Length: 130
Image 1 (tube, one colour):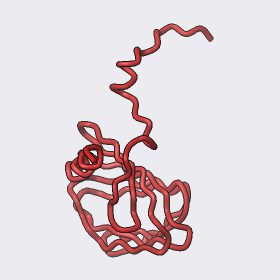
Image 2: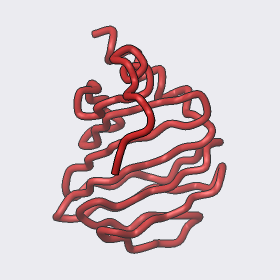
Image 3: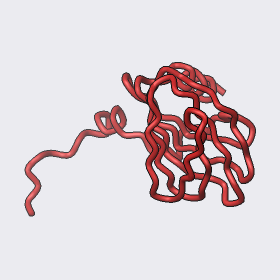
């Protein structure tokens, strides 16, 4: 197939593309680290959680989608447990209390937040300044 459109310039590419492993790691909580990428209306967290961790319920304005890439956990959502494994996608509405229990395998996931999480953007900014 013949290409019709020109490639983006290096400057254009750099304005739109982030290689997330190059983004500094931000500690979300002890045993929980993330590469954060934030846009105007959403934040994405590429998170790794150590085995055998518990994160008590918390809540935030942003809706959240959790995509489990590896490992497993019991996600606490509004006082109920949702067992998640590789390939599962969980939707957490705005301001609903949620937390999790991560087991022996640990957890790797992508978390998507909308609207953007200003608090996480501030953590990333601090990490970039270091």
